[in-house]
Length: 112
Length: 114
Image (tube, rainbow over all chains, first blue to last red; front, side, top):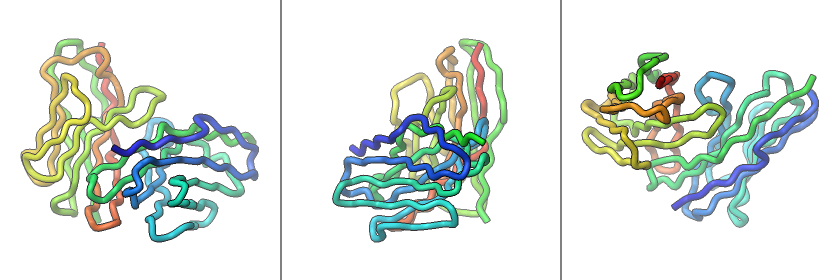
């Protein structure tokens, strides 16, 4: 079955700098890769996703890149702000699998 | 638009007591439904998922069970709670289209077993 590894487990950056979180997956059939942001005590919220037919997707300050050959995908946050502080989860899914497989999470802290 | 509800929002139960958590989805039909548990400071553990009424897949053997009595209702149960059952329980539903599987989480139930 699918296995998703996420790094780093914790990340601390200065406000205004960029943050990058990386994930690798094992199942070459996976074709959908979402990213979730979870603030303390809240539910995970879908912030961006990418499908296997594209290599990059941007939404304002966040972007996701996908390398199908290497089986890895990354979340990029530019011009970080204090409200970006949260736990971020990556996930992968093959359509037929009917479920997402999540990474272990990255605790991102933005230092003012 | 679609919405997902969970109740109760918080629950404190003694060890050995039963449990019933409910999740309902509005504004969609035949969704996939999921139950996750999140221990404090930890990741998302998939417990059960369902692709239709009466169809339940279990991911982790444990003292919990799930049922889907109606298309948009998903229930998580236990006959006897353990201390290790404490955590944040999240229900989720997903859009099921080829290559397009957005998944959305409910607000969660915070369970403390004493």
